Length: 355
Image (cartoon, rainbow, N blue to C red; front, side, top):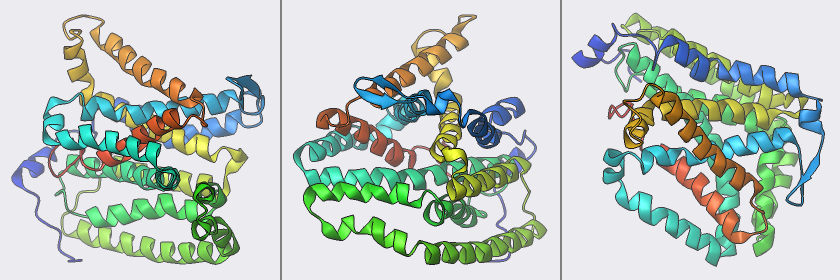
């Protein structure tokens, strides 16, 4: 990597004088910057309470209120991508075939092939890890642009940092086996090679953990040195970005690495979903208000927010309660998840000024 920072285009230099936040200081701190810390605190507060420990039967399944809540939120935020992909006419026109043909093809594959079911079972788990890392990366890139930096400046460094901070603790930490148990789905197609993966990971977990720690430490030193050099060349430090990366990274290391109070999945999915719903609302809320003809009403904004949240959470409840042994319903929920991960890879771009 060159030690000299790229010169930002005039438009981005002018943007340096604008607010350092994506929406506003209050909105960003409430929905983007504080959620990792708040989710960690909430995980500690609910641990060992009836909310997490008391089980009851619902649709024949034993559930907890915590599990029902986070499951609803997870599924709901996955469906929220449709407001941007299919609800935004400009975005929809650019990727019409992907938005129409791909989900039908994925659903059909799972209905016709158990191999597709097994592959999707694993793909959803690990694409979720990658996608979650990229959400923090994407927010950080927006903050960099708000500070007046060139879109490509430090991009690869930030990408690898977020993959390290999110995927590293997953692979090296206490929740590793919970992720790799998804390979058990290959039992249904008698694929012994893949079903052996969890045991292989468990038997080598100590060595893998130390390798991640060693490589991660070296990369963090390189990252800090590279950004120090860029700062000397004119890179503008964004405090919101620094806070976001540090707080999310520490939360990920502690939560995925040690699974405190047994609430790792609750904590990490809670703040991720809150950030995503807030991002979608910021981007598409105005368009939704106009479509509902609420933009001229005094209470139009809260009504539109209510419609948005009720819509995605209604799907979330349905998806969470859908019987896992109903192949068609399960395939629908997995199709929504895959499309969420895939669409997010190309419908948000700082470089193309889509955010």
